Length: 310
Image (cartoon, rainbow, N blue to C red; front, side, top):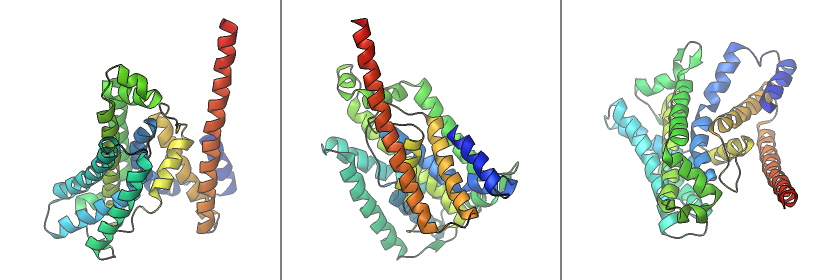
């Protein structure tokens, strides 16, 4: 409802907002956030956070560009980017779980710096132009008026829906996030579930690198700046809880779309780009505070219900 109200207000404010070209631009601009936010949501569902997604994406795009210039075909370039993202995710999950770190904030902050440094070193601090035509088509070609990246988002979303809603692993994620101690007593492999969510988050960053490299026809160590902010905002705006065990795939996609709509509207209204950062930050604060208030209200309701039953 918030998204619909936002669209209605902006359509009245700007005559260009609901034009087919602008809608296509919004969908293309939010494709990367949408894909990476889906992986971020799994991590947040388990009471974690992945701060490395932006740097992970940048490193994956640089490795993809380097492999292309080394003569690799399109399929191999795509595989390099996705595997690179998954590898960083595996490092995050492995060190957090088996290194017994107190919080994933520590390791993902470390890999944020490490991945960014590696990307800058490998690319010598500059963008590397050139991508296979098959990858560039994701950013330039359209089908039925929709950019190709939208269909990548839909494919990833469909895979997530099947995995989280019909497979045991998906139910394990919610169980681990809701009550980790109870999940352990039930025999759920909590450690491996946690590691797997970070691997998936990293994989989504790799897929995001493919989309962004297609749009720009390049790999760059500067890709993904503040992407962690956007994806966390999308997940929280979509109703997920930092306390774990709560969140829905569709809502995360709506949260990503809301961020895209807000940014697009601010551009159409010629709002300063620096002010846009302030707006997104305020939206995050409001969303997190809403989550806190919601949990307090639910706790009071449960207490009242328990009192009536007794």
